[in-house]
Amino acid sequence: MSERKPLKGIHHVSAITGEAKRNYEFYTKVLGMRLVKKTINQDDPSVYHLFYADERGNPGTDLTFFEIPMAGQTYEGTSSISTTSLRVPSDEALDFWKKRFIKYEVEHGEIHHINDRATISFKDFEGQRLMLISDEHDTGVESGKPWEKSPVPVEYGITGLGPVFLTIPKIDKTEQILTNVLGFTKIGSYQRDNNQVDVYETGEGGNGAEVHLIERNDLPPERPGRGSVHHVAYRVEGEEELQKWGDYIKELRIPNSGFVERYYFKSLYFREPNGILFELATDGPGFEGDEPFESLGESLALPPYFENDRKEIEERLKPLDTKE
Image (tube, rainbow, N blue to C red; front, top):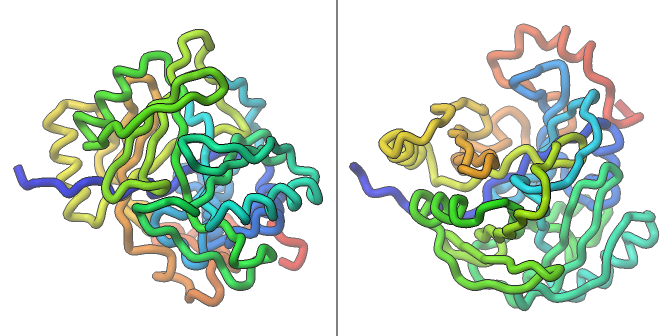
């Protein structure tokens, strides 16, 4: 079998919202991320799939949301992606963000260090568990570049995805998938909220390439809803590499989706033993194949295989912005 290249880091995180309009307002106007793609859930074209990212949606910067209007409340627990972190350039940026959270009445904690990096935890209007993490002392996977037209100054802007936190009942099973299958390396541990957190990295490492595992066998499984995370995706270089990874996972007899065409990238999905959905996704072709850089996210973008249904799809979707 051909040698596989290491995974390059976190590709994207996809979460659930019940209110696309409020979601759009929070992530673009409060967090200052750019809506780089306004499209549909390809598995349910009656609702939005929104992609927020850096200026052009570089791999490793996308926080995406499936709109599920009927989604109920999330009951937090294990077998979950329990925190999504977002990178900012410096420790100083966290002071800016704390003041901004106060101004916009965003639920947040205090600035404190975890694993020797400055962070601040916060939640969106649906209780989505989020954290800003400083890149001040980071080395490893390069971050993205904030959009110059963002309401947040570029020097404080969100530059991409940081470590994802997985809360699981049996750490050894997930660790085996991360290390023996996906090629991550355990690099250390630290304490957070009286729980041990084990840190794993891939590729060039650093904030953009880490997974943090928290074992909690004292909690029930999470019941996901609005404000929960659907899956985490890891970066592969391109289609050829994805094919190699697909062959390898098939050889290991791990049940998986096979190759899925997402138009902006190609993917493969599988669940690790604690039930968390993992995705492998290609770095390209990216978001500029159907829209120019200058107007990314301004119009409803549909993959070609949905274009014939555009009129019906647009009639079902509610505008995100009052200017639409």
